[in-house]
Length: 117
Image (cartoon, rainbow, N blue to C red; front, side, top):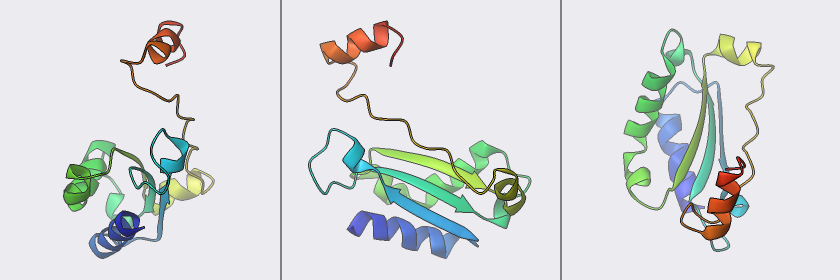
């Protein structure tokens, strides 16, 4: 949980978080047990008011640059102003199921060709 803890600490320090949830979703992917490679971040902050999504994402990427250069393979970001969070029903979307493999894997390529990937 060292990477997850680092992500949580850095985001708490960098943003006025009304809500911060960092979920390790690595277990849903084709990685070894106890991996810290895939994360979902839900962050609600008044700092996001009036900001386009790309600016919000860039701010997160800047704070988590070290983690993103290291073991973190995927980072799903759900970033809201308090007003947007209220309007959302206070729930971030569920992450899609992992399809496994990679596009270089013949099974994955077949699923992608059939419109499943």
